[in-house]
Amino acid sequence: KAGVTQTPRYLIKTRGQQVTLSCSPISGHRSVSWYQQTPGQGLQFLFEYFSETQRNKGNFPGRFSGRQFSNSRSEMNVSTLELGDSALYLCASSLAASGGRTHYEQYFGPGTRLTVT
Amino acid sequence: DQQVKQNSPSLSVQEGRISILNCDYTNSMFDYFLWYKKYPAEGPTFLISISSIKDKNEDGRFTVFLNKSAKHLSLHIVPSQPGDSAVYFCAAWTSGTYKYIFGTGTRLKVLA
Image (tube, rainbow over the protein chains, first blue to last red):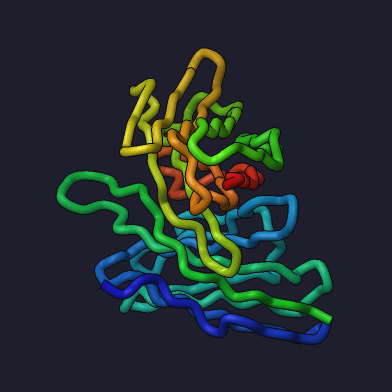
């Protein structure tokens, strides 16, 4: 099976602009989560989607939003970019529930490196 | 608040010796704990996990130990290999929250 793919891999934007990042999960995975990774901060949870519904979100401002499509592909959008939004954005997919059991392992894509100047 | 903490930002170990990576947590409601390994320019890869009802899980060279009373888990790698050099993240998950809490990572360097 193909792994989680993220596009684009690298992005340079100017402060005040907006950006959309895309994630294609592993085939059959219905849960998609997004994380922001910055030096010294580990992976900060942004939000999780399952069957086009956001089930949880982290402590990020409303400038960060996301959505999931019927094919489980997901996008996240950041509006009015700030310098502090420069980070590696990671997407992870999970099988979630299947066969009466919860599959909690997540599989990550390579990330999108966003630089805001 | 940092519910999952990895207090050692880095660790160096000689090839063939044991590597022990530590993680502390504060929330006793976590159901599962996971370890991920991350190489530069790649996303984290799942390594091993443990349920909160267990105290040990082993997979080849990797063993995770859970001490619930101390709210502490550790990852043992025996023997350590140069290819194990990476950043290791511990993560915790609670059923029904659909949210993983990650630590800040420990950079392991295995010296040949």
